[in-house]
Amino acid sequence: MPNPEKADLVALSVLSAVIAHHIFRRHETYSLRVHAVLIFVPPALVATLVASRPERGWTYSSAFVKSLATYVISLLASIVVYRLSPWHPLARYPGPPLRRATEFVGAYYAATGRKATAIDALHKQYGSVVRIGPNTLSIIDPTAMPKLWNVSRGPWNIGIKMSYKNLTMMGLRDPEEHALRRRPWNRGLNQTAIKEYEHPLTARVQLLVRRLEEQKGEVDLSKWMGMFSMDFMCDMAFGGGIELLRDGEHTNPFRMLQRGMSIASVFTVIPWFAVYLGHMPGTGWALRSLHTTARTFAAKRLQRGSSTRDLFHYLNNEDLSDVPPPPKQHLIGDAILAIVAGSDTTANALVSIFYCILANPATYTALQTEIDKFYSSNDDPCNTRHYQDMHYLHAVINEALRLYNPTNLGGQRQVPPHGPPVIAGSLVLPPGTIFYMPPFSSNRDPHYFSFPSAFWPERWLIASGHIDFDSKEARVPGTLTKDEFVHNEAAFVSFGLGPIGCVGKALATLEMRMVVSALLHKFDFRLRDGWDPNEYNTVMREYINLTTPALPVVLKARW
Ligand code: HEM
Image (tube, rainbow, N blue to C red; front, side):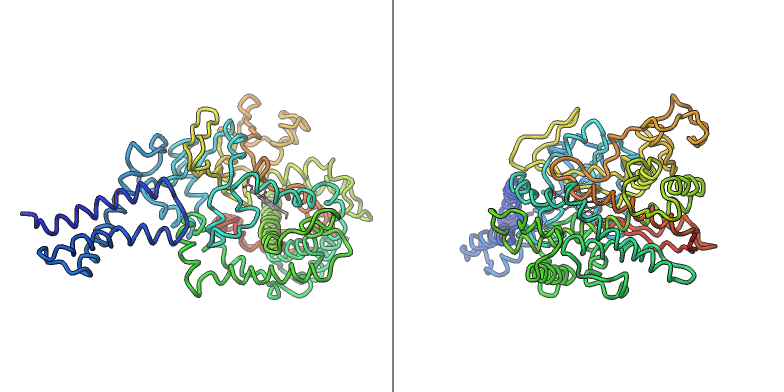
């Protein structure tokens, strides 16, 4: 026989949990106050109601505890049942039940640094659209991608920032607000501005060459690329301020960035959890330290001004006499963004390019031949005049980015929760849908690239008509025939696309071309004897960006 006193309390708690779930679903928010109200007020009301009838024998506190426990369990059950039900807006998209029920599966793979690999396995099982979380899809359909890249960003950056306030430009979800903040970035990274950065870039590349020349025995290229790209990013963004190539990695004030990557990667999947943690004292130390360092960099740069046109020259509107400077908070956010978006990505790309070249001797020889054709021993390979004509170099860079894109999941997007659905080809994405278009999967899909796992730079030259499929230089792998050759560049989106795609693409391309040309011009490289190249793939981790492992090489100056 059910106990009628208890039945009242349980029924009221369950009912209020179901109602609260549906209110929360419609008005999703990261506000802790609203969460607290939704969690504690209904059980408090139920407890008040049942405790007001003394004949029922409840004290207020025992009724509250009982109601809260019933309420929370019912709330969780309501959420899970709804997510697995055919009424969920994403019910038509396939995906494993556990992923559909909870974000914590995605968070687990993020913590282990295997989230892109895990999503890739799901694409192989379920096809080009997979439900990888309760409200999240992964899409690798190149016919839909151009439109989908234009959708606003998702809550990813809220997780990284552990707050939904004062986000950097990359976190802004309102397209108009984002476009406004992006204007100075566009001025600071257009072709004219980049021409000005060639000088500090050349100086840094030449320093890298000198420092490598001084090294004896084995060097870890991964470490040197990291130091080079951080030094240059600070030159470019703030007119200087860091000397890692000179003073060593241990002097890097941004080194907490790498350490915080694995945790931040988890937070991108469960941003609400990061916001909770952000309110607790003692948490988010890496973030706070990054913030303090960025603030110091921004303040120093503003105080000393700049004799050259660095990125801050544009971000601070110093190039526009009639426009006032932006709020300081924006500049600090921009300083963080330049470091986070510009240094690690390029360093990772460079390490992967060198790994691919050194693990593929035929590519190495062909690239060396091209570099030597354009730059004799007396020429300066940092002089950019031939880069446009170095098609093999460009193909090698593309092919390395295809296999090892530094931002393995690309960007995150969300259909605005209170707008119409987004329709792209045969896909209908309901309001609120979060989605990724991971280059890791689209770039390795055999529907879009023949022999997708092979490092085969020549594919780009065949596709662009620079070499003939049947020629010897094409080095066609296996028994592939011309008719079977697939090369769908619409699936290759390394830098994102559209108005919120990577603003630093042209600069990153220049950096990669210059570093590869200069190092291969000066040195003969080989991988350290006994090092297994497969280690590169097994030790690599996928956090916010790829985290490349050590790349042990031995080098010898050619002249
Ligand atoms: C190989 C190197 C690089 C790769 C692969 C890369 C890739 C990306 C990707 C995939 C995005 C996200 C796009 C999206 O959400 O649609 C992005 C955004 C961004 N990148 Fe890069 N990036 C690289 C280098 C750089 C460099 C050198 C800078 C210079 C500072 C830079 C600055 C930015 C900024 C500021 C954003 C945010 C753009 C916005 O919100 O409008 N990136 N990048």
